[in-house]
Image 1: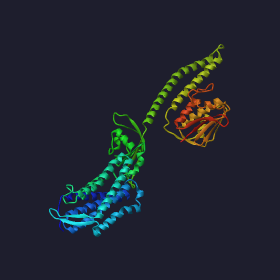
Image 2 (image 1 turned 90 degrees about the vertical axis):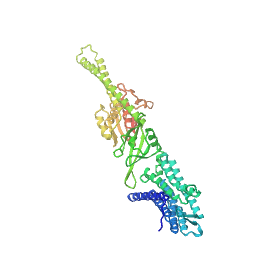
Image 3 (image 1 turned 60 degrees about the horizontal axis):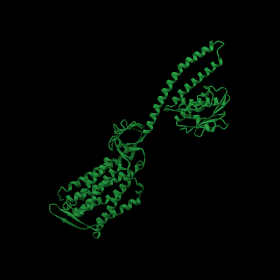
Image 4 (image 1 turned 45 degrees about the horizontal axis):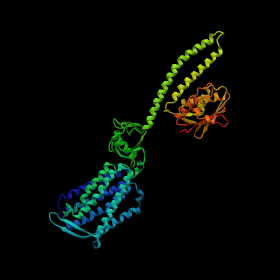
Length: 553
């Protein structure tokens, strides 16, 4: 064998080495995980590039004309396989798996297979129109392209640009975070086509007599290698998988095993921009306290130094590909307004609680003194003492004590419910009834329900509704606690509430009872709302008042 050495072979051999390295990496991933269509087709692309560039280098380095012609035919086996492989890869990459049917694959491969057969048989010079060996500083083989070759070049160009069109369309549809990788893929795929046209036009340095088109394989291999490693092509779902992410108002991110952000939907990109962070940085640059290993959900602060603070609720799910974990999917929902409202309500509740405690303390002390002197006057008063007046003072004292107690209870209901437990409804109703002064009234509790609630606060609901029934319905009123499709009710046999007043009774201080404070039903309403339920005031079947707690979760 005769060999010749030239620097022109360097880039082509480099492309072969890169393609084989990518092929080995891809084959190992397929072996370790699953034979995903994207990975399998990419393996085919890298092997085709290796065949194309490898035999191109051998053709250039060898001096025997017949051997050069054999290598020419073999290199075009790899070159002919690249357009259909790239087209099918684009379909898999954009999740158009339904197109990867046997009939579609057969149709795409029909022309390349026919080309390869004609390449070796070459009837009437349909592929190879002629061969010329040039000798000089280098022995080169120049092949005249037949009409079949030119036709296949046109087919390959259409197929390649069709694949690029699919990728470009999907990248534009999904969002800007995918445009860079689509651009790199387009660059790698179009460089060989550009080299083909430059080589045909004999533009320097393509006029040297050496076919430089295979050297473009090094550029294509590096571009695809960059996409594979920079965007973790095989670790994360393809482009179209994230279509839903584009339209989500929540920020959605894909993290790699190291916790770095590798993908983000448009809403997520806006969050990154606001925080001065970008793709490729760790998630902790956005959410400082974030750790995907231990965080599944929670509320965190985000924002750049000196900027407005934003609050996001975080939800984390592991991302697995063929079994092993390859990263995480993180969803950030902006809850800034909810957090601000909650903090405002908490501050209001704290102030209300402090105010109620102060008022009750300041009122109870002089009230206690007044009650002491009243009891002394009642015990030691002489015949001139107006006993009826003293009784009225005692009644006023009792009413003041009730108002103070209700104010304290109302203030506490402004606090958020943080923990709930399973509460047997009938048992709690009976327990509460036993601790309320209900005279000769009767209770029937037959819900058979267990609800998720704050037991202490739910007891206050029953206390106030039971007292309300006795105050308005008299000592012989009958009270019933019964079930609803999405909650329960408390009703009585009293006079009921006129329809025009059913909204007013929930307002602070509203009462029609001679000795009522007007806070009881407002307390009920506050507790029900704190649980996330709804309170409806209506009429009972027997004409009394009925209070329905609905929307139980």
